[in-house]
Amino acid sequence: MTTSEVGDDDFQEILAQTRHFVRTAVMPREQEILADDRVPDDLREQAKKMGLFGYAIPQEWGGLGLNLSQDVELAMELGYTTLALRSMFGTNNGIAGQVLVGFGTDEQKKRWLEPMATGDVVASFALTEPGAGSNPSGLRTKAVRDGSDWVITGQKRFITNAPTADLFVVFARTRPADDDGPGIAVFLVPADAAGVQVGTKDAKMGQEGAWTADVSFDDVRVPAEALVGGAEDIGYRAAMISLARGRVHIAALAVGSAQRALDESVAYAATATQGGTPIGNFQLVQAMIADQQTGVSAGRALVRDAARQWVSGEDRRVAPSVAKLYCTEMVGQVADLAVQIHGGSGYMREVPVERIYREVRLLRLYEGTSEIQRLIIGSNLVKSAQRDRA
Figure 1 (cartoon, rainbow, N blue to C red):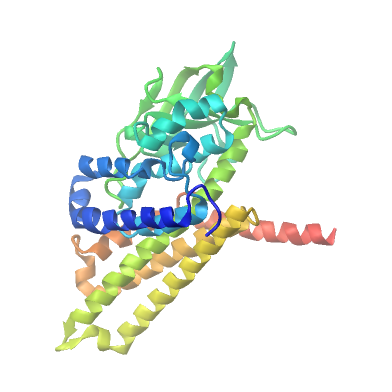
Figure 2: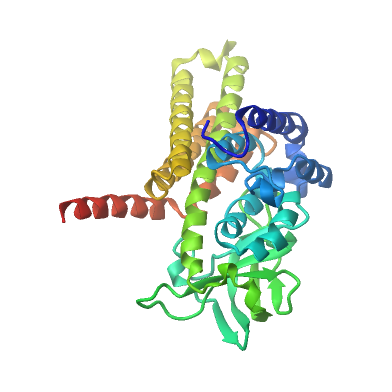
C-alpha cells in the first residue's frame, strides 16, 4: 500500500465497513431505488456517518484522506451495487472536490471542504455544455469582471447532483484562448445565488436514483473570492487533472460492476437448468463466463496499476485514459454476456443484470468518452516519440 494519511489497517477497516454496507444495506434495496428513482434518506444518512461523502478529502479538512490507490479499492466495492449510491457522494470526493483540494485557496478550502466531507454540502462539477462535452476547450459560458466581482452567464448540461447541489464548481471563459493560456477560470457558485436556475431532472436510460439536470447561469454575480485559486487561468488545468483522476475512479467502478455481473452469471449458470442439466455444464456457457472472468481480472490489475502510477506521479496522463478506456468497454461486454447467459430472464426489469446492462453504458461517455481516451493515449505516445527523436 502506498503511504498515505490513512494506514493500511485503518483502510482495511474502512473497506470492510463499506463492503458490509453495500452487501447488507444497499443491495437488498436496489429494486426500491430503481422504482423510486432515488436513494432512500436512511441510506444517505448511513453514508454520511461512515464518512463516504468525504473519503477522498484530506483529513485536515474533515475527510478520511484516502489516496487514489485506496480510492479505487473502495470504488470497486461501490460499483458492486446500483451506481446511484456512489453518485450521491462521487462529485464531493471526485471531480468537484478535487478541484478545491488541488487548487483552492486556504480560505476556500476552509469554507467548503469540511461541510462537503460531512455531506452537509453537495458540490456539483459544472463543466459540460450543449456544445462542449469531453473537451472543455469549446466552453461558451462566460465570466466577465465587473469591479471586484465576476458576472457569469451560460448553460451547463448533464450536471450530476444538480437537483440537490449546494455548490456549483463552474468553469467559464474569461477571454478567448491566447498565448498566455486557454482563458478558462473556475468559480465557486452557491446554488442559491441569484440567477442560478436548475432544470428538471433528466430522464435517463439507466442509473435510476443518480440525478442530473441542466443548470443555467443568468448574470450570476459572485465576489472575487469565488475565483478558485484566485487566478484566472487555473480552470483548464484544474479540469484536466480532476478529470484524469476521475477516470481511474470510473474505471474501478466499472470493475466493481463487472464483478457483480460475473457473480450473477455464475450463480445463475450453476442453478438454472436446460433439459434437466445446469446450463453451467454447457461448454459454450463456460466460455462466456471465462471471457467475463478474464476481462474482470485484467481490469482490476489495470486499475490498480494506474492508481499506483498516479500516486507516485509516474503517469497522470496516459495511464488514466488507458484504464478508463479498457475497463468501461470491458464492463459493457461483461454485462452483455451476463444478459446472454440469463437468456430471456436477463431482459426482465427486476433481474440485476438487466439494470447493470443499462447502468454501465454511461461509463463509456462521462469523464471523457472512449473516443477522447483513444485520442489522449495515441497523441501522447506519438508526441513522446517525437520529443525523444528531437
